[in-house]
Image (cartoon, rainbow, N blue to C red):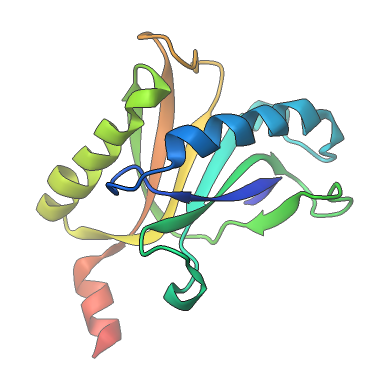
Length: 162
């Protein structure tokens, strides 16, 4: 899957130094304003927030993530000035539904990291995607969005490290 959008750095919601609630609304407003510039947008695909880690040496904070407010596209041609193209790698995803205001997304992420992942046969592989479609009502208690955690089997990742 390919995404085109605006990219920024955030400190993730699980950090005591979190900046996501300050940075992301501004990034999304800027992206919505420029969304019409995105060519090859797959409108039925919704919109995506893609989060990934840069290598440790490239981060200004241990919990810094890159975040792309973007749209899925059929082609990486004609990327608007100031936007980025990101190829989401093919992998296994654990898909969760976040219900309620987006400001409470940290509760869903904490559940994934602290309850679901330790009890599952998977571990996080470093990329997450928020998928926003017609169920998204932003700050409404009736809002829904999908949270995709990219995962690998714990046993497979241990074997690869040997």
